[in-house]
Image (cartoon, rainbow, N blue to C red):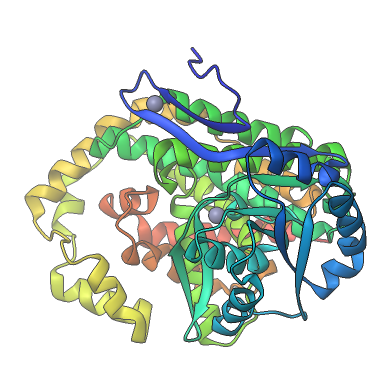
Length: 455
Ligand SMILES: [Zn+2]
Ligand SMILES: [Zn+2]
C-alpha cells in the first residue's frame, strides 16, 4: 500500500510505516520538453534571487548558451557566465576559476552541462553557501540530483559530500541532442537498481539491515519507468528521455529517503570500482559510470540466479566452513588482487572475522533466507534478456565492450568486495565458497553473450 501522498517533484518529508521519516531536500524538479524557459519562474517560486552565475563549457555554450541566455534574461535574471574550455577536468584549477567567477554578488549558481561541470559548481556553491541548480545536457547518471561531487584532488578521484541541489531543471529539447551513448548510460545506471534492491533485501534478511517497502516501491517504479520506453533512447525520442530522466530523479529521491546509496548501489557498483582501478593502473581511458554499472548488473543477475539455484537442503555447510581462508591466506589474496592498493582493503576490512563459528552461522542464515529470496527476487529479469534491452538502447552489455579483459572480469568477481563493507551478493557468494567457480562461469557467460549479441 502506498503511503506517500505528496508531490515527489518537490521537497518533502513524511513519516513512513517502516518507522523512519523519509525526506527529499530538492526544492523542485522541473522535467519536460521546453522547460529551459522555466528557470526564472522556478527561482521565484523557491525564493532564490535573480543574480545567477551560469557555469558551462564551450561545447554546450555553442549549442544552447545563446538560447538559455535570451530566455533567462527575458525572464528577469541577471546572468554572469563562466565557460570552461573542453575538455575540462573537475580539479583544483577548475574549482578556483568558478570560485573567482562567483564573487560575493551571486544569489545562485546554475550548472549547465554534464557531470564534471555540475560537480565543480556543486562544490563551489556549497562552500560559499549559495544554492545550485543543475541543468544537465545529457542524462548519464543520477549524480546530478545528489549531494556528492566527484572531483580530482591532487590527481586522485575523490568523492566529497556537499549540499544537495536546491532545484533541478531538465529540458528534453536539450537532452535529445546529447550523443545516444550518453543517455544510454543513464539507462545503465537505472539497470543497476535491480541488483541494488536484490542485495539490499538479502542484507535485510541475512544481516537485519533496515528495510522499507515504500522505499523499495519507489525504486521499482523508477526502474519500470526507465525501461518502459527504453527503446526510444537510442534515437533520442523525447518521451523516452523524459521517462528516463524522471526515473533517475526518483532514484535519487529514493536514496534520500533511505539516507544512503543502499537502495541504488550494490555489488554491480563494486565490480565497476574494481574495473576503474585496474583501468587506471594500465592507463585505459575511463568509461562512463552508467555504462559500466549496466554491464555489471547483467553479471550480478547471472550470479544471483546461480546463488538462488543452490539446494539449501543438500548444501554441505561444514565443507565451506573448513575451506574458509585463514587470515594469512586472505592477506595474500588481497595483495594479489589489489597490488599497491591493498592497504585500502585492509583498512575497509579491519574488523573482518576469521572465526569459523561465525561463518557457520552466516552460511546457515543465507541458506535459511534462500526460499524467501527466490520469491522476492523473481522480479529480476533473465540476464540475457536484460543484455538485449541494453543493446537496444545503444548501451554496452558485456565487459569486453568496456575494455575489461577476461582476467580483469574474473579478478573483479574475486576481489571487488574487499574495499567495501556493504553486504552484497558478492559477500554471500564468498560465504558459500562459490566465488572461484562463479568468476569463471560469469566470464564464460559474458563471452557467450558477446558472440550471441554482437555482430
Ligand atoms: Zn519507510
Ligand atoms: Zn551509480
